[in-house]
Length: 200
Image (tube, rainbow, N blue to C red; front, side, top):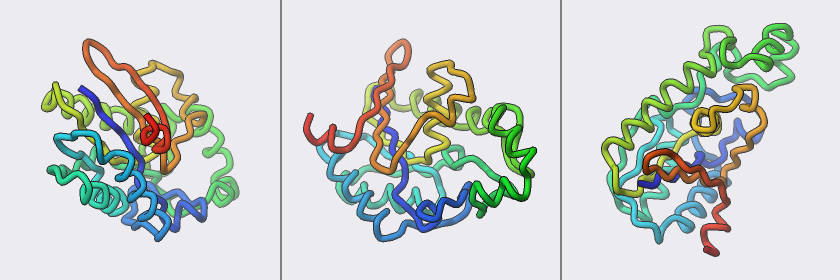
């Protein structure tokens, strides 16, 4: 089977460099245009279904893409972004001013350290992996689209690569990135842009 993972389109909080976490932010005009471009890149692939985080920015992205695909959409809270707790709505400079020591410890060990009242990278990874494994069990010979968030997509990539969690900060998932997971006995990971897909 093949799982195509994409990030939601841009929001005003993305543009301002603010941690959104699990807030109910929506796409801005650029984000809706990005979702339409993703739809155009994906429209010639035969998908059986879409699985999406249940937050508004991912729901809207999934629905825009599905206007081209016309397949069932399933919403899953396990595909949500990391819960940033008290740091939600703050920029990195805000956090460094308010919680400098904790922020440094979190950057050094995101697997075990969490934002105040938030979740660790381990907790994020565990729930995203549960979701992807569940999708795989239901769609063994099909193509599935997953619409999620940068943090959640990084989590599944690092899990499958068995990489050091600190590498979380080294993976860039833009709004036009498409991550392809191909599963037979194990997973194979490919990353490309929507322009790559259009030209293939």
